[in-house]
Length: 211
Length: 211
DNA sequence: TCGTGAGGTTCACTATAGGAAACAGAGTTT
DNA sequence: AAACTCTGTTTCCTATAGTGAACCTCACGA
Image (cartoon, protein in one colour):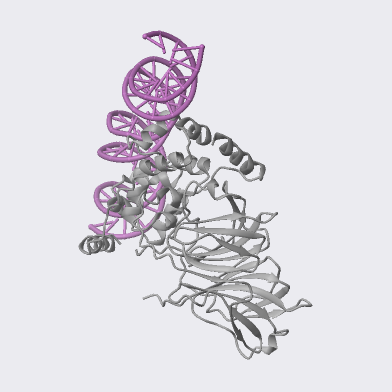
């Protein structure tokens, strides 16, 4: 055990991996947020319950806030931690691509059981694949085999009701507004059970086959 | 400004959501990570430079670590903060996970401008983050700064109408059923323009911040 | 010119986080 | 069984985070 540990450490250092953390100018960031909202130290004090002086010191990097203090900050300011930690000046590799799909203007892709409408298909090289599906299938037997594909899938019922059959679980009854996240290499299949064919929105991760 | 601020606060409170942060069992989480790697307190001490005793106290919630201590932790353990903060769950490479979220039963997360409802938040270690959002904002000015985060985002309007402001494009008018895919490190912000507050479904890729 | 007040910093003090060492418990070895 | 070792907890001390009050600094008005 200790052996592995030392080995790990050695490896990590040898590999040139940072054992240290980046500066992380938390104070600077806090001040930026505060000023952006035109808040005074007193305002922030009210919101967070931290003393004015404490906030001043944090902003000027004179102290390193306790974790409870950080929690009070993110709670009181109504922001979340990543937002607090995102560096003041972003060295953005921003590309700023975007791809709009108006309702009903996706790329149709019909099958016997599903009618898919691929969304945002202008954009190549994306990490997610969103599509809207009209579930034509009415019985599990209509599927000759499980649908399965690498990665993960998120699904929300937009209209109607469905049964979600999966390989390892009992069928699940989902109605409008329900959503589910699952590993999509587990076999799955949808059937409509409402009067109208159900409509679902799905987003799959693109298989990037973990190296 | 203070007016808007108070209003925001009032709104947030009136919405029935606590403005405070969840417990966030950091100690428990740390212990979980440590045991998962079969590290002893001494091992972690070596890696992080924190005293064995300190680590023990943190794990047992006897102290609230300083932010510098947290940095030493994430640096020494080679993990990133979100990972440390993600509630107890095991990182199983196994397949067949699933996570159902019934309509309205996601995890509420209100901010002055948005009311997020995180979906499928039982599941850790997922590659996408789905959430439903009620867009409270009515004017671009309500945002103190661009919202931006690493990765990509897919968004569909479920109800109402919105304007999507982005850093590099003209504002885009989106109505129910419209969807868009974009690089989310490009600044973006939504405002409702329909009578009712608009509702959108978003799916973000999880930043994988190259280990 | 002098208040006067609001926003921010500094000071002096208290509360608490971090570290070294002692302690306690469970195996192992002799 | 005693001695040793490895692990996690507890103790005690110090370094420092957090607080209220005093103190600046500057804008504004009579």
